[in-house]
Structure formats: structure tokens, C-alpha cells
Length: 445
Image (cartoon, rainbow, N blue to C red; front, side, top):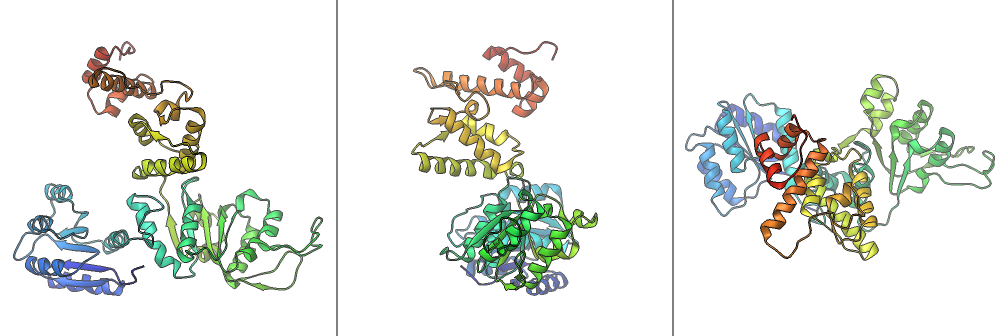
């Protein structure tokens, strides 16, 4: 792992702005080189690798946009560029983004938004320990994964939030593995919402023999079992107020007492909690203890729903199908129309729903290439997608186009306007295609 500080190249000719930004970056533990002209920027970027560049548009010797074009035409790999100016125009912003710039900010700058952007870009610029993305390829998941090496070096409690099925436990396991790549310490997970309060207390803290009916021997709880490793408490928002008091004491003192026991047991654990609820709102309404909230909320990682990070859908689907192939010696791939269907689906159940969808398709169809019908329709149909036949390529493409239009019409219950919008064509063009492909339509639309 690279432990060197993140490096920023600040290209700013305004003395007051440049000094203020460079001082703030140093306070935030960034390494900052401040240059005041385009020529100085060319020399700095040629001599050193940076994690991000912050560049003003109005420079004394060259326009910032022209500087960026010149740098793009060089053989040097550039860091992500964030442009700033007091003379912003929409046309210029669009040009810069099309050229490959990451963002375009107008002055006066929102320093907090700028710092958030810089942190995200810096984390994306450094590879993980393995050099391979394990959580996702979207910018959101890459930023989270980039944080893991730093988090693994500290015992700070971590709160993971996100909708059900987004992969909160997977992220907790990734954090644990980052701190223990050899797998020498335990990772213990418990779902707080799946157990009654009485059972949960014994599950968390253990019990001594005779503590209650059925306690025929001493038993360790998950706090003890996780000693030296990571304890993952899922759905912590489901715990009762009484249990929250007990959790607070255990987390704060790093000690537990078994149910029915008297002897405190000291622990050394990393605590990771997860929730699909808004704990802050629960604190405001009195449903969650404020002191416990701040104990578990030292570092907050939010996983966006799958519908907001579509880049991860096909990447995850391939990994899930690879897992299926390794377990069942049954390799499967996705038809191009199936990939489109996956990208169009809203995935209310997130990764869990995607996994079940692919497993169902693999179980119910014998085809090695999974079509959209296998994923969302009749998986037992022997012709889920138009199959290549001996004939012209245009015939096969026309069959694919016909099926895609029919699927989209079906998804929109035959509504022409909505279907045309989703397909990115005009109503007239859609009608012409339907007539050409002999696709029936509802009258009066």
C-alpha cells in the first residue's frame, strides 16, 4: 500500500486565492504544489505524478482550456482535472467536460464541496492492495474501496448505510480483509433485527450456565467470538431502547458481562454497524439513542442503490455468473439484449435481487447464453432470443430489433409515446418501424 500523502497540483495565478487554497490543502493533510502560470504547470506535471489538478481558466500566459488540450496531446498520463473560474459559461464547461475534465467550478468556491471532490478523486487514483476492484467499478464504489486501506489502519467504528441488498456485509468483510489479508482474525456477523430482545442479548453477550431455562453450559456471545477481529452488527436500527443502552456500555467500555454473570470481560474488536434506516432521523424522533449514534458513527460509508450506479450492474452480473460456473461447472453468458434488460431494470432489491435473478435463469434454462426472457420472462422458452439462422446478417439484426421493440412496448403496456421516448426515437419513427416489422399496435395512440 502506498502511504505517501495525496498530491495536488494547484494552478492559480491569483495570490490571495492560491495562498488560501494551498494553506487549506496542507491543513487537510494533502501535499500541494502551487504554480502560477501555464508554463510552470507544464513543468510540474511533467516532473511529478499528482492525484488531482486544480486549474484556473484565466492564467497570465495561456488559457486554462488550451493548457489542458496541450497536456492531453502529450504522452504524459494526466491526473483528473477540476477547473475553476470567476467567468464561467455553460459552453466552456461543456467543452471542458467533453475534453475529459472531471468538473468545472465557479468562484466563489464552496470549499467543502471542493474538498469532497478532491478526496473522492484522490482515493480513486490510488489502487487497492490487490490492484483489483472488489466492490464495484462505479465512481461511488471505487471511492469507498479507496478508503478501506486507511480505515484498516485505525480501530475507528464504521457505520454502513444503504438500502436492503446493496452489499453492506460484503463491504464490512472487505474492510476486515483489508486489515487482515491472511485471514488470521475472526469476522463475526449478526442480524440484530432477526432476533427477539431476549435472544439478542444472549447472542451478543453470551450467558453463563443456569442463567435461564435451557442454559446448560457457559456460552460465548458474538462480542467474545469476535475478540481480536471484526464484529458486524447488521440492522442496528432495529434494536430496542433497552438494548441500545447495553450496546452503548459494551462499545464505550470495550467490556461485556455475560447474561447471568458478574465478571467483566475485556475485548479488542473492530465494530462495524449497518442499517437501511436513517439513524439521524431516528435520533431526532427519539427512536435511537444519540450517544450510541455518535459512538458507531465515527466513520460513515453510504452505499448507493444499484439503480444509481448502473456501471456496476454488468460487472456484478459477470462476477455472479463466474461464481455460478465455478460451483456448478456450468458457464453462462448474457445475450446483448439481456444486458440491455439488466441495465433498464430498476433493481428495487439491489444486488440480492440481481443474484436471485441470475440464479433463477441458470436453474430454469438450459441455454448457455441467457436471454432477457430467461431473466425476466419465461425462462423455459426454447427461444428466449432470436437465434442466428442460415441467412443474411440483416435478417438477424431485424429480428433482434423487432423483439427489443416488442419488449419495450410490453414494458410500457403498449403506450407509444412512452415507448418511443425510452427507445430514443420519435413517435413517427416508431410507427414506421412497427409497420415495417409487422408489430401490432393499439389503435387511437
